[in-house]
Length: 408
View 1: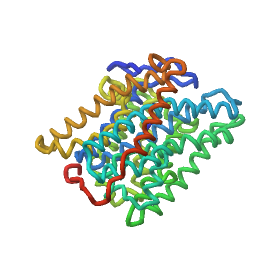
View 2: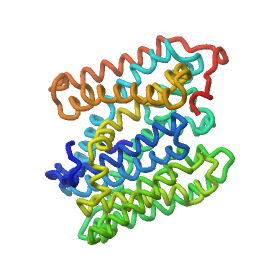
View 3: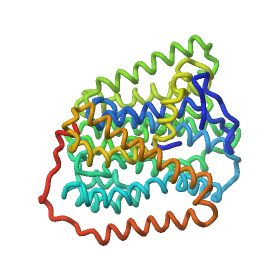
């Protein structure tokens, strides 16, 4: 979710390399667009397996971040790590802060008592990027208790942040010498096996939240992406275009079927290798699209609509769940799909505005974010969030309810 500009319907352009030496591939933005669309439809109750889009996000993040780190100049030392973390914070934190600052008063005015109480209780964990472990420790089941929690979706953002903290340090240790990429591949592969074993073991519990939200269990997708970014899997680069087209069609069809038929935690094989196989298919699709330019899958993924959704995906993911919780119960008169369309439209508008006026200025240090103004504005917003948390009274438990039937 969150490793994060223009291509046409023609073969996706491999742009000039970024500072880390990697060209931008527009089709990967498109994959992110398909992933966020699946998640939105899942949360609206329209796509039973759409939650698997998060795994595609994870694989993309592992792939892009590992490629960026391996392509960076060696020998940067601690300063390079700090620089990486600062860039990640500048890329991801401003939009998150804006969403939190808007969501808390929105829930105060329009939400239920439970939604406000839980929002205030979860807020410190959101700030610490540890909300997933908070839910695990408190026994808050992902599958049956998230409908009253406006920050429930941020568990995946927390997992990625934790990955961003640990994985660069691991690479700094092992990515040395002539065989650095092979060593990284071996470490990533070993991590995949350990993570898979934990998923199978912990997924046998009655409440699967620990297996679903744990950083160690969800690392399987992130590390498969990392593995795909190393040298050994690049044997797929030599595929003829026709063979690459056929393989992409097979893999994309497999992902689409999984999204359409998987029935949440009730899927019998989900934690017995299902999540793993889905992530393997996602990793292979990413490698083929990245290594064999001009495939039909790359042209489709790099076309305008999925690419634009991918560019907005981070802010769209942040906004959609609070919007859904507040709006969907009030739109029941429009029918399921009518309510879904309105809620997604509002989420898209909020995401587009956030990207244009928050993400891009901070990322490119333009407009209001030039010089010291950007950090000052973000600091003010952080202080506003703290003030809201301190000043808004915590509601009495049990004073209100939420109509979850409108959401699932």
